Image (cartoon, rainbow, N blue to C red; front, side, top):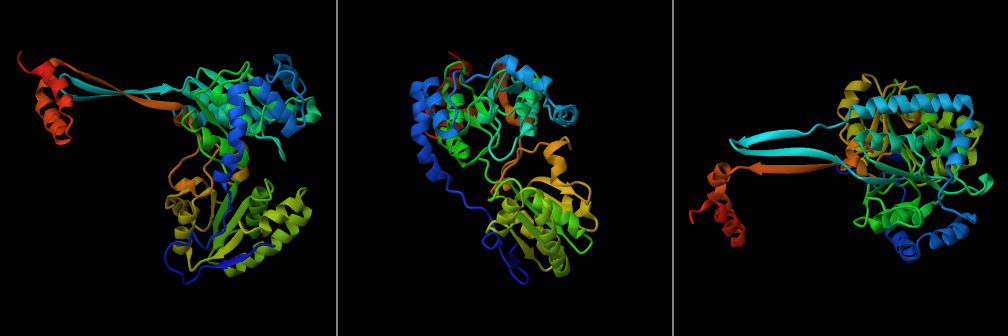
Length: 431
């Protein structure tokens, strides 16, 4: 069911040998270009036609009525409501502590630079539909934006024919719990274009965030610059660094949990212990047979993006997982906290037997919108910082400028930009 990759005795960069889902986002971007241009030029009319074409829903209005949002909350299962409220509470606690404060540095007497943190004015938040329902993604997008102080938030999610052309009611209920009443029934690349250009009742946004399928990722790549983006999200992935002390059933359960998302989801175990690899393989067979979405899980685990990598020892395993830079990394070893502290590249790190990725998906307080496809080596997950811009405010008086003027002139002349120096000299040289 799951392939075995033997990295023992190998040297150098293991990335070529490790499994990873292949996505041609560049090709997809060319395919969504005409859709995005259509939305740019025809606005809401294009959105209605594209929604009927791709989602099989004929909209009369792309915006979800407020009474539908309120009704979704009224009809929400009390247990789900309690779980969402607790998820929101924990996420707020974590993200509130991420807030940055302005700081002024006195560079010289009479000369200061202040770093001022200013939130983005308006953000569009994308919540996927499709195989699963993601009210948790509403929480993960909205909470950090609110804690950053974003003044205008709009959520969009694909319409569902089963719910009268509205997004899933649990998604609408999550919006209601968070106080978001600007919600659109638009999905796919056209939703990103809606936020980038504005369409109908939806004003253009400064940034769009949130995970989605390849068409969403392609539209983000295509429109980056027209609109700010968080990242190009690819298929979800989990890597687990484990040794002989790991519980094979826990490992198998967590590999299955991520494979449940999609047939291209990646589940990777890295271990120096061949007996653990065998035991996990046995437990996978049992769990896949028993789980609801067994066919999907089996396809994901059998795919080229998943596998068990055998390594020489935990130091070798650490090098492998740092090279892989997983979206989610679990460390299930003896002295797991110490090994986790040495991890440099991961979207989020889950330490020990009782910190599974599923906890982070819903209720750890951490954010589950994370970099995929190896991007965790240079990009972090969604946070309050995503929605903040650091702006430097420079204030020098006459004496402070005069004191540094000769350095500015020297550097301006070295770059053959003498007018730069002249702009300073005009203020500091005697008339």
